Amino acid sequence: MPVEIREPAVAGRFYPGDPGQLRADILSYTASTGEPKLHAIGCVVPHAGYMYSGHVAGAVYERLELPQRYIILCPNHTGAGHPLALMKDGAWRTPLGDAPIDRKLADLLLAAFPLLNVDSYAHRAEHALEVQLPFLQVLDSDFQFVPIVIGTARLDVLTALGESIAKAIEDLGDRVMVIASSDMNHYENDANTRVKDRLAINRLLALDPLGLYEVVHQRDISMCGYGPAVAMLIAARRLGASGAELIKYATSGDISGDRDMVVGYAGVAVL
Image (cartoon, rainbow, N blue to C red):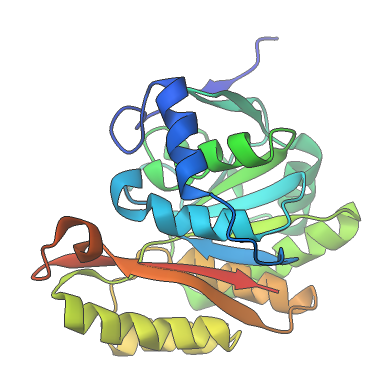
């Protein structure tokens, strides 16, 4: 039976399609700071084009003790497929090679949370998860992961997903990092974006998933991956998280110089 390969959708657009250039860029974004590594249960990392947010994502991955297993959660930007879509077989291809899906962990997730649906179509054109993989391929080459794209904003579902992720990790009995792929506020001026983003970041740092959910809705913060972040926080808390650290924050204006309409990027480790 042939292995299902999820082909790259945004290579050459969100990040370099040339393997040598891609590796060089990631090494530049992940240059060592000399600071001690963090043993993280989860994290929030951005997913814009590397030109804009690669330095924030790289700062996160450089600071973390990277395990060999990941659950990567991302929002559904395309609207395609099932609202809780998981792939359990095969691999994802990038210019750096194939990243294998963790079948054992995927099966545990499906058993823990029957609302998850095996659906590769939802992942086919989604960039938010794909852009994380080259960082892991350069820094942590021997890894497996489970991709989950989230297209629901229902708090009860996000809560149940987070609890089920924790249960699956407990049942697995191995270290797994939960990555929530999210950009922060979108397409307002730099000053407004920084104020809104700080409100959301404060809830992340407080390990407060309900508070994050509420502030995003009440203050109209266009954080595209707040659903993944809420589920990650719930899972991390059940798994014993006791704190969080903001590793890096920036806006697209820091790169482009355009402060009139920016996107925010936060890198947060949950410990």
